[in-house]
Every structure is written in C-alpha cells, then in structure tokens.
Amino acid sequence: MVQGGDLSNACDGSVSRSIYLESDHFSDENFVRRHSQAGCLSMANRGPNTNGSQFFITLKECPHLDGKHVVFGQVVEGMDVVNQIAKVPTDIGDKPRIPVQIFDCGELDLATGLVKKDQSGLISEPKEMPSFTGKPVPKKREAQ
Image (cartoon, rainbow, N blue to C red; front, side, top):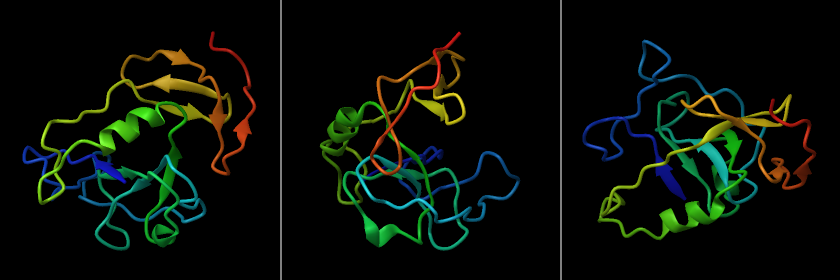
C-alpha cells in the first residue's frame, strides 16, 4: 500500500489530524465498501474512531483491512502513478527517501459522473470510471 496525508512538519506518519473538526480525530463512518481491489482509498487509523488526515491506497486486494479501515474512494485514473510511488525506496520507518507529493487529484461526483479537480475548480470527465465492484460506471454527461 501507499500511505499519505501526514500534515505535520515531521512528515513521519506520527500525526493524523482532521482538518474539518476541532478535535484531532473523527469516527468511522461505515464499513460497507471492501478493500476488494487495487486502488481503494481508505482511512489510516490507530484503532476504532481515530480517523484524521492520513489515508492509504491499496496496491492489491486487502481483505484483512475490511471492518478496520473505512474505504472512501477509488483511484479511477493514474494507477500507474500509484505503482511508481510504491517503488520509491523507503527508510527503516517506511518514509520515502525522496519527497512524494500528490497533485491534480479530484473528487468524483457519483450523481453526475464528473470529476471536480481540487483547488482549481476545473471539471472534467475521466475516460472510464470503475465502480467499487470493478465494473465500469456509465458516463452520465459532459462537463459544461
């Protein structure tokens, strides 16, 4: 798996704080979705109801994580990039030896089938959108 989201200056994985709440952590939402394939985006935590800013992306099916980590998304494009990130050499604490940053990501609106790009406000449509079951989701409409 590839893990990220540590917002501390140390970037050593020790800090995971919610940017949306006054408290550091928030509760588990549900465990409906499974870690059934590569590309699942899931919350990293230190036990029940300790979600913060850290997340991970699976590189393969990981059923041992089901019921412990909330799956909240799926990589729809760029899994080749995730696999390249996974190849970056790490130190003994699993910290990458060279900085890795994720840019130009977005949020898929399931109602419209459109991707809203972070910060830029741009809207685009991915080439093909796999569902959480691995089957393609039909495109709904083009961005306007």
